[in-house]
Structures are given as structure tokens and as C-alpha cells.
Length: 97
Image 1 (cartoon, rainbow, N blue to C red):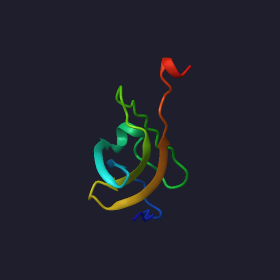
Image 2 (tube, rainbow, N blue to C red; image 1 turned 90 degrees about the vertical axis):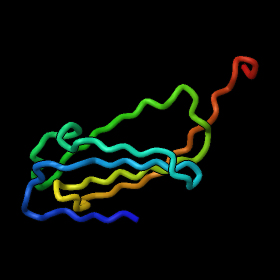
Image 3 (tube, rainbow, N blue to C red; image 1 turned 135 degrees about the vertical axis):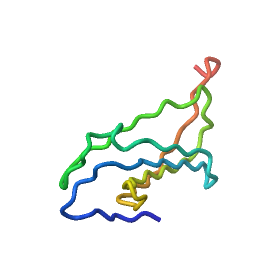
Image 4 (spheres, one colour; image 1 turned 90 degrees about the horizontal axis):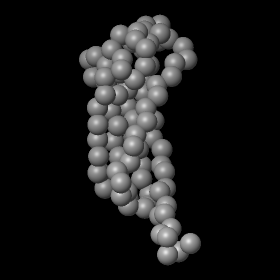
């Protein structure tokens, strides 16, 4: 479950970005990043951008994946949570072309 809790009127001086990945409902991966390495700190109130990219392993099984990304402040209070799903298809082999 995701919540959106942002401290109104105060900037964010640090924290963590936590990413959780599930595959058909099974937890398969998690990683934690320093928030200030993913965006410019302090994060002032208003609009801001957090950008993260990920290179998939050489073989990634096709199927349905869910990703949840949480932003935590320095006291580990959840500030934002974004959850979305992606489907990864199979790549045709040379024999299929």
C-alpha cells in the first residue's frame, strides 16, 4: 500500500529512496539509494524530480513485474510512494525471424 505524506512547508535535507520489485507477486529484488544522489538536496516544497534508471540482467524472464518506490526522510518517515507495473515480453530468437 502506498501513501503520499509530504511535510508541508519544509524542505527535505536527506533520506533514502527504496525500490522493491516483485515478479508475479513474489519479492525478487530491493535496493536503497541515498536521496541526495538521485536528486538535488535540499528538496524544496513544490515540484521536484527524482530520476532513476536500471539496467536489466542479460536474461530477464518475461512476465509481469511490479515496482514500488518509496522516499523516506532522514528519520525514516515515508514521504512518498509510487507503485506501478510493467510487462516484459520475450525477444524473438534468430530462428523465429
